[in-house]
Image 1 (cartoon, rainbow over the protein chains, first blue to last red):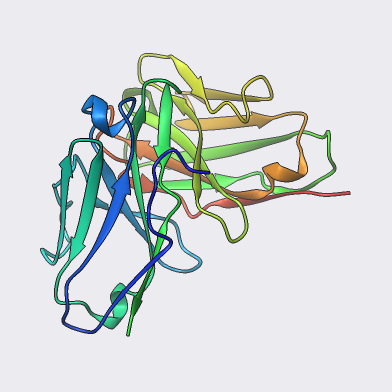
Image 2: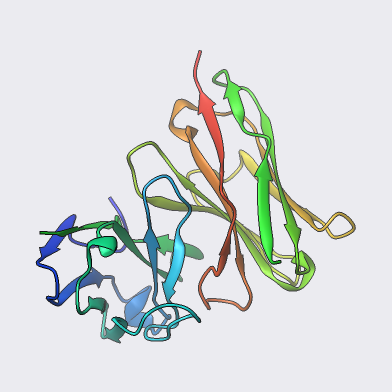
Length: 111
Length: 118
């Protein structure tokens, strides 16, 4: 069971907007530690998608956005495209564990 | 080009040992935070260990006392010594860089596969 909780799956039609939630606790997200999001295509290494809650690395489309509030964070994807169909993970720091923690991952299906 | 290349994975019996290597190019491991992250077959990502730029090391509870992370600045390489391996350590092991603490892991290697089985 992951320290950060994500829905196992979400889906949306092409062009629609979807959100993926990441719920933590007072020892990680709620303590103010930044949240990062990764996209992992099948058979490849994860790719940093959003860092420090809401910042996009160079080259990431502005269709992807992130936010953090309280003990949770969210990843939003607008204008869904077929190529967005893959796995997404959130990550933060946990002071109780003195280390990084990941969410269990969410599989996005584009209908 | 900024790049990480892992090596050293393979098949090992339970109780055995392996040493993974992560060779960096295009940047200096000494001034970055270097991590090992693993992914068991069909499962999610799990942080394993970190070597901070200041020299401190950290481990997930699941590997504490069995795995040791180290750094060779002259070779610009980070290592993960894995002892007392268990079946549940079977995974793809990725090396990943953080440029600054808690700024996200922005560079990843392609991973090396470790299989623990008799």
